[in-house]
Image (tube, rainbow, N blue to C red; front, side, top):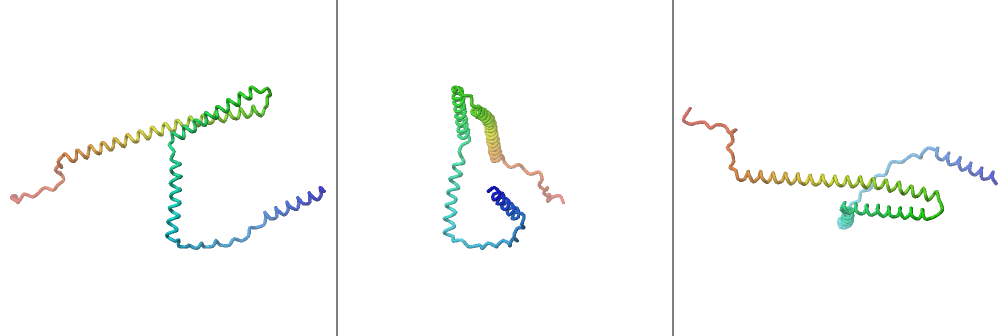
Length: 173
């Protein structure tokens, strides 16, 4: 029985290695795709259907960053509560299971890492918000300056140009 199995495996191995080493069949040139002219009515319906789905996905993706941060924070708080519950149940059980201990250590490491990343994300979001606030203030300042210059230009009479060519005096030839 074992000879039959060994023989079958060796034949299978030989066949697969021979198949893997054989040259690839000659590839034929890629066929040129036929370009069909679409029906205008169908095309507009398809485009409008895809456009509405795209707009809906964009609206879902435009969740405020503050809401995402709150959601992440609540998830992390839930994970911390679960870890404390797991630690309490492990402490109350009298068996010293090494797998449970390793599982708790893994959870602690994971939550420590996630807390660190969340803190970095909070710092990045705060700095991004600060940059956006400063940018808005600079834009407002530039707009106010431009408006003041426009108002001053409207009120002041035009200054005579000094680059104008002197006019010849007809009395002095």
